Image 1 (cartoon, rainbow, N blue to C red):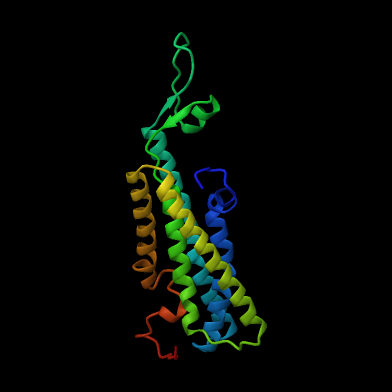
Image 2: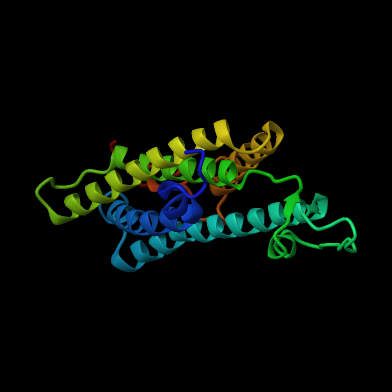
Length: 223
C-alpha cells in the first residue's frame, strides 16, 4: 500500500466522494421515503419533499469536498517551492503552482494537507450517520424493497471498510504528522458542523428521519 498507484487508491480513494455520493443517494431516497410514509404517515407529495430535503445533504457534502480540496491546493501552492534537476548554468525558473512544476519534471515541496485523511474520515462518518436510520426501519423481509436496502447497506459497509483501511494506510505511509492531523481535524469539523449542529436547525437538510426531534410534532413511532 506504499505505492500510490495501487488499485484501491486509484479506483476508490481518488474518487472517494463519487463512490460515497452515488451509494448514499439511493439509500437516503429509499429509506427516507419509506419512513415518511410508514412512520410519519405523510402522503406521496410530502414524502417526496422530505426525500429531496434529505438528499440536499449530499449537495452540502459536495460543496464541503470541493471547497476543502481547493483550499488544500491553494495552501500547497502558497507555501511550496519547486525543485528541478536543471543544470546550474541554466537560469532558475519560478513556478506559481504545483502543476507548472510537475510539467517541467520538478518536485513541489509545500505544506500538503492530507486530502485523504480529510475525505476518508468525513465520508466514513457521513455513511455511519445515514445508515443508522435502519435501526427504526421495519420492512417486510420478503419484499423487493428489503432486498434493495440490504444490498445498498452492505455496499456502504464494504465502502466504509475500504475508507478506514486506506485511512490507516495514509496515516502510516504518507504525509507529515501535522498534515495528517489537520486533514482529520477538518474532516471531523465538517461532520460535527453538519450532523451535530446545522442539521439540528429547521432550515437545513435535517438529520436522518428516526433522529429528528419530534418535540414540536404530533407524530409518534416505535423503534
